[in-house]
Amino acid sequence: MIRSADTLFARLFGGALAAILLAHLLAFAWFTHYGPPPPPHPAAPVAELQADGTPRQPPERPKPPLFGGPVVPLVFQLVTLVIAAWYGAKALANPVRRLSDAAERLSDDLDSPPLAITGPREARQAAQTFNLMQEKLREQLQQRARMLAAVSHDLRTPLARLKLRVEQIDDQRLHDQMSQDLNDMIGMIDATLSYFNQNRQSEAMQQFDVQALIESLAENAQDNGDEVTYQGICRPLKTQPMALRSCLHNLIDNALRYAGSAHVDILDEADRVRIAVVDNGPGIAPEFFESVFEPFYRLEGSRNRNSGGVGMGMTIAREAAWRMGGDLQLSQTPGGGLTAVLNLPRA
Image: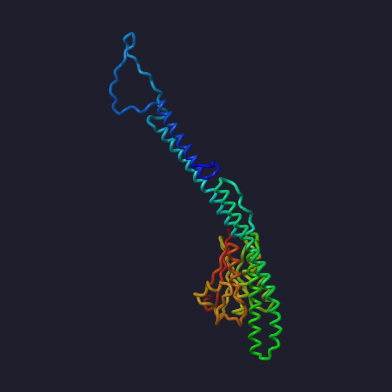
């Protein structure tokens, strides 16, 4: 039973029912007006006589238009049902498409405009639920950021006191070990806050000079005494400047930390920009390529704690690449080392 006409079910059912009724009404009117088609072998009718004895002529039925047979009503039925099917498919697809577009906008920007509450009742309910989910996600992220900021603030005070007390330890070996542990804890706190702050920020896409950014990063590294070179040219790209800077900075910093030098190779193609940060350090085994993107994951041995870092640089770099609509993959450098390849789409 249809309780309300303001539902998707009522609209689909009503449209299909109207199409079926119209098709049958036209067929009924057509056969009433033009009559059924003649039998294949009609028998000779018995002629009726008029008063003067001449045969009575039967009344002539109108000649069917175009051609005989029930083609016209059948064609009308087909057209009517096709229109009803098209309307039904559109009524079903529009709410799904609106939800899909809103979900895509939400994945790029958590502060995107809410979904308009229009359409049949089911579509309005889905839009309200989607907007409520978006609001709850924003609240949860804000609460998480506040909690992390509070925790990091509260941790810094006892850590600072511990560092002062460590300085009073006479055993140099124990002093160095405890100092390293404290520095690791402080670095993990700073890296975690940086990671969540970058993910929380929303940045608009804009035309950006990628070539100038790479040149600037290389020159800054060279001013600090680091060996960073680059090769290739690139046209301006529509991207997120801060996310791109964060990604490339972490990739170059990672190469400098473990290899002492970095080379940036730029390849500008029709549909994408490929930026490879190459080092000739100890490298990583292929089975660990995905593991190093996990937060706080560090390989012991070739890349250990003594070389610095808390295991967040590659995580931040890949997250930034995803926010720009690209991807970040690792491969082995020919001859030894690690190559980080950033692919950014031009469309």
